[in-house]
Image (cartoon, rainbow, N blue to C red; front, side):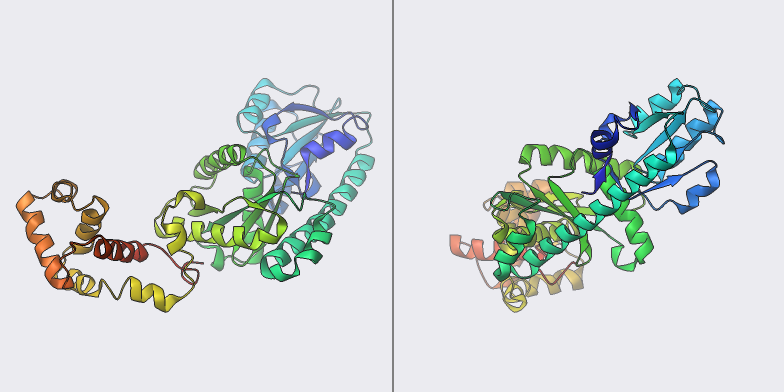
Length: 390
């Protein structure tokens, strides 16, 4: 996912004597560009994922350096390189501690290194990696949109991915993404990529069809689950004003099945939005896996809303919760005790309500077939279809 701090340290660390001082957990941060910074006013030009470089001319005091790293971290910068030996002789302990605690890469370069040569070299590498990333994301989008053209996608992706390996799709959907302009969407994209720590060349991150998409290749599921758990926690802390839902599809073997992995991730992110959860894995959705992928909206309506219409109308007109009562009754295998407990009512009240429900539905709910039919109908009320929440 772009030219990373790790890439920079690997290919250019020795040449320019770049030393990682703190924030090693931000090793996988991608770098979109390099900006020189000698005072705080330049920060208005930061779009996220920028690597800041300073001689320290405007940040000679430890308090100024601490303020700088805090601001850069908050803006989603990929890291900071300090040219030490003239204006800053050593990194203060408080600055190191902040960078370490916030996974913000802090690096130093000695004063005898020509910054112009280093920035020119790294900028060219970033540009070339950006071209490569565009090629990869274009090929992945093609694989999603036109699965019948798999062979062409396979050829395009062969230099970068194990096309016969396992692919998994993660969809990330901010609640107000559709209303964002291009600049704001780009900024959000950079922030999200910064927070997706510990993953780089095994994945591609891009924007497609009103959502941010991450496609992983041969990433173990336990590693991906751990990474996404940390990702969601970081979002809660760093982006509290954004309601973001995450949906993860099933692992799929071979690039020819990427479109299926994408559809399943779509079902998971829609379910997360509908149920107001932060993250849902498709494979954890049980029967909802099938219900959310029913493509026929009329069939969904016939099997769900239409079958339950008498209860929906009654609840709406009388302020009752018969739908909820029916759901509990069916989920618990017809347990009156469970209905009474979960609705905080007396057993006789539960019996009375279920009697009314049977009358309204015109069905005694005695047979397993009828109970299954109405349970699926209730589940369909909560299972957004592919044309619902985008």
